[in-house]
Image 1 (tube, helix red, strand yellow):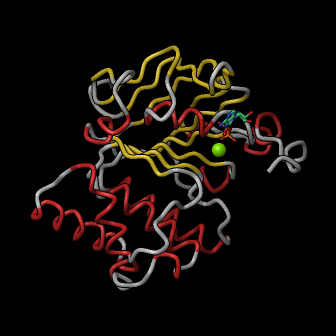
Image 2 (spheres, rainbow, N blue to C red):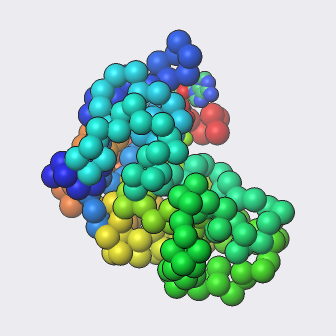
Length: 246
Ligand SMILES: Nc1ncnc2c1ncn2[C@@H]1O[C@H](COP(=O)(O)OP(=O)(O)O)[C@@H](O)[C@H]1O
Ligand SMILES: [Mg+2]
């Protein structure tokens, strides 16, 4: 542990003077998926924003493959091997699939050769995208756009990938497809931090689970040790009381 993957230690973060994440620690290992769970408003997205550098971590440490990146600017974190797929399938709708992917790797200033290799790898992993190279992103389905958003992130050749609710707003059959791809990413050796509100979706692929509530960790354990999923859902991820929020 430590020299590989991502270690988040007692991080705090928020917006201006509002602290919404008070104490979050989470570990992500190469070739494994850590699910970051919690009800709506728990601080999951804010945690990812702090890890990616979009929001400042006002306390704690973020260690990427043994290096402290807590105060590194966001774009440099991408260069250091960290990629982030934000909530809501953020693709360039008026650009083709090909252009979207190339833009995804742009910040890395790869040589033409390296860029072509990265593109090739993404198309290998997502044949569905390869078949739609010249299609406008906005013309694709929600699930396809989500895969494209993930493909974009992969263009920077990350070793750690942060995914914020990739299943959000997708039909259940499509969610299965997306999760199958996420599992393939893990099998390729990536360390994946997967934010989800859907417990069963997350636990179907995750190796480790960290649950946060009101900006702090309330449970952290290997998925194999979870014996009572119903109890887990009721205790920390209650749906009835949050149904109105989203
Ligand atoms: N841009 C923002 N400015 C102020 N408060 C925010 C902002 N974004 C989120 N919040 C607040 O931070 C808290 C945690 O939000 P978030 O991290 O998005 O939760 P989650 O992803 O777990 O649903 C919520 O109370 C939310 O209202
Ligand atoms: Mg969120």
